Structure formats: C-alpha cells, structure tokens
Image (cartoon, rainbow, N blue to C red; front, side, top):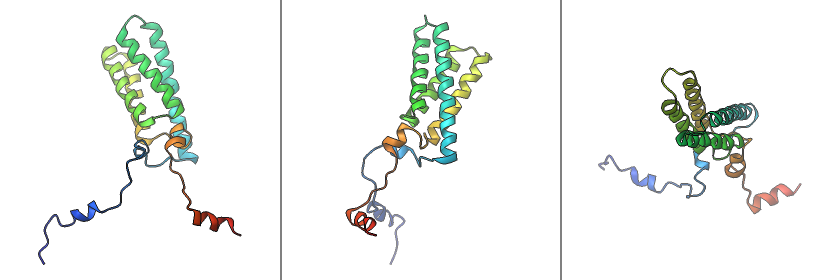
Length: 159
C-alpha cells in the first residue's frame, strides 16, 4: 500500500480539542504559586509601582502636551491593571509598546530617562510572557479548576 505524504492530516482533524471558551486562559501556561508565584508578584508590584510613579511625575511636568498626556495615562492605567494582575498579557504588551513610544517619541536620544522607559518595556514584556502568577485577579477569573463528577464526589464522601 502506497502512503501519501499528507496521509496523517485527517487524524489531526479528529483530535479532541478544547472548545472556544475563555480565550484569556489560553494565554497562560500555568499560574504558579509558592516561590515562583511570589517572584511574579514582586515583579508585578515593582513594575506597576514604578509605572505609576513615573506616569504621575511626567503628568505633572508635561501637562500641556496632549500626546504626552495620553501616553502617561496609558502607562498609569496599565500599571494599575498590572498591580491587580488583571488582563496581564494584554496590559503587559500594551505597556511595553507605550513605554517604547514614550522612550523614542518623547525623549531625545541619549537622554537619561530614555533607558528607564526601555527597561520598563523589557520588564513589562517579560511579565506579559510569564503571566500573573497565582496571586492575581487573572488566576481567580481564568485559572484552572478541578472538576469532579457526581460519581467521583460520592466516592470521596464515603469513608
């Protein structure tokens, strides 16, 4: 029997897949707890507090420029969302793009604050890739849950 190069493709179509459900859960591989979760929490806290601090200080110094105002507000809102751990991959990506725009559009090359914004963009990209960890709103809303069937529940309740 002669096999064609595409013979195995039909079997992939019959492979059981997850139905379209919560799309945000698919952005995370896990929601780690213990030491890795603590590290992600510290990373989120440090990043978000620095984002909010810099956004407030930039808002007070550049209040007349509308583009600077919009970028600083986006950084502050992103910092608040990252602090809570809500929509972490989406907000981390948006903050990274916003910080790169701030670095290259609002600061002249070689300026001292430009490297701060580039560093914030790198850290927010890593937070977006790693996920929020177990101590976040994302973990409560979109985390993996253990489901028990009635038969399994009855087996557990009997001594």
